[in-house]
Structures are given as structure tokens and as C-alpha cells.
Image (cartoon, rainbow, N blue to C red; front, side, top):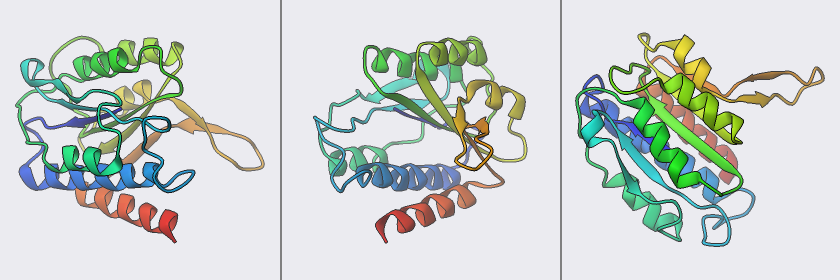
Length: 190
């Protein structure tokens, strides 16, 4: 599941960068472990757009579109809507979509400011205990990194010390997020 923050603190240019980064990451997923890995019998995709409580919604139910192209278009066509930020509701919708699926992953794209709804950190903790992995792309200098780190799942870093870190990608700007996602896609495709 992808959850994209479209709140008022993100301007339209930043929103376009977020969507581009999400599309590049979707393309990476489509090419791992093999080309055309987004399929009804392989990786499935779902999309939540979040902002104010009333406008936070599931845009694409998990597995609705069986191909990369259809899912990519869903991201490309996604309109920016909203003012405040209800990360709790976004996580709740992702949790509902991922019920009884395995493996389960949420990619949360946000500027890290949430202003409305329940406790997103507590919701994320419950999801992680239920086996859902949460990775966060946090953008901007105002991101509440304590809250972001609480939401993110630990991941193993493959090195000789076998350490773990939180699955958090922290960027100063949305342009940096887009650039890194594009660079990662080029590495996968080469």
C-alpha cells in the first residue's frame, strides 16, 4: 500500500514530485524480482491519499488493478486534495486493505506534520505487531522525526554487524526524494 500526503503544507510542485517518486518506486517494485512483477498472482498495489479526515480515502483498493500501467496511471492522475493531515486515518485505511494478506508493506510519503485524527504512532505500533511493515519517506526540515521513527518498522541492514535501523528515508526536499527514487530505479533497470 502507498499512502500519499496531500495536505495543505505540501504545495502543488511538491505534490507532483511526491507522485513522481511514488511512480518510480512502483516501477522498482514492478521489476523486482523479475520484470512485470505487479500482477494478480504476484505483487499487488493499493493507494491511499491522505489529508483532512473527510478527504482521506482509499483511491485504489489493494489488487484492484492487475498491471503496472493501470496502477502507475492511478498515481499520475491523483489530484491534490486537502488541508489538515490525518495520518491515523491513512494508516487505518491501509491496515484494513492489508488484512489477511502476506507479506504486507505500507510506504508512507509525508512531510511529517500531522494535525488531526487519532494517534498515528499507536496505530502504527499495532500494525507492526500484526506483521505489517511500515516505511516512511519523510520530507522537509519540519518533519516530526520522533513521530516518524515511532511509526517506521525496523529493518535489517546487511553488513557484518547485522544491525537494524528504522525504515525511514529522510529528505530535505521533495525534489531530493524524486531524484533518489529515479536514481534507484535506474540502478534496478541497469
